[in-house]
Length: 274
Length: 250
Image (cartoon, rainbow over all chains, first blue to last red; front, side, top):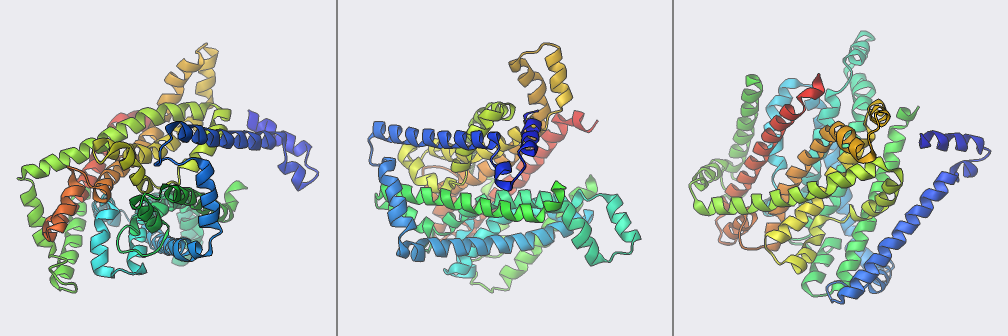
């Protein structure tokens, strides 16, 4: 109901993109979000003041540390942020490419699906920290091992969603494509992938937040740089202000990665909005 | 159905055969990566070991307790957020801030708050399990048939009764999907927390101790057990789903 009012209002005011964007509803929305953020900050401030503990530093100490010691510090970028983000993206992209290809193939074949399902669930249930030693032995102590840990951990949601997506392809569309003598390649890129894409993206989204977690896990063992490495070192050295600042940086990273993925999703799935 | 089982078993056997061949070929020193068959033999031996059952119980209890708490918090919260547009908009800002915080990064914090016992593990499990259940509940509530809600309104049902009798049942398949995802997350997180943080009892701790003593076969046997639990969990959750939501396919 209110959605309808919203679009009607936007149409009435539609004499420019900015005017359209700045509907009354949108302004109220932004105002509410800012108020909520203020509330969260106030809660954080009052709670840590009341607790008065070195474990829970006040935000007036943490936020300057986020800015000065993390975001505007070139050695931090060099030693912590850049290595972590590169490993995360490598692992994520590797897992995404393999899982989507494999998942679409499995989803189109009932036999393959029934054969591989138990094995997939077996592998999925193994916690990534338990695999660290095995991966250390196989891939050594370098970046390769960390990329593989991330890739292995983020693969299951993408794989399972791709399988699901490929299974939900409309048989009529496939038959039409076959009747029009569209080749195997055309069927995959023009019929199966577009139909499975929404589910695939749902999996990618889940995996993106998992990737941040796995990035931290992969830096627990045999790491000398990275965001997770620094957070863990801080918590052992009682450097709690810097540890909390690191957590804030992780949250910022998570939000940015999610926003980036949303942009890609909007582009790829643009046809759905029509 | 029987063909699905035999095919699944065949798939597992083939995967096992490949791993066995790779480990027997000794690309990696077998002292670090023992043959798959010896790990399986060790796993079978574990089932007769009382320490194993204690550890299993400790891990499962922490995972189940943390999951139950996440359900109790996330389902009512998701219902309210799904039903009220303004509550949803206000809350989503907080949720977007908290969700990307990796639960593993909270381990130091959880240790400070709860020590290394069950409550620390349960805290991490609850934090991680909240999100899939919360989001699926919200999606489920948004997906409810308008006619059903309006009918209930015409019959004079109040907000609370509408939520309980119309929205909740209609959203229940979505909620169950969230719980299904959360259950496997709970297991992974309970064991992961044990490996990273240590403590007194649990599968992750046994895994670490076996490795520290150089008994890699035993350590991998525990890893195998977590995989088996994952498969069993999946089978049980699917069976419950088919039973609970039989009405849906009609």
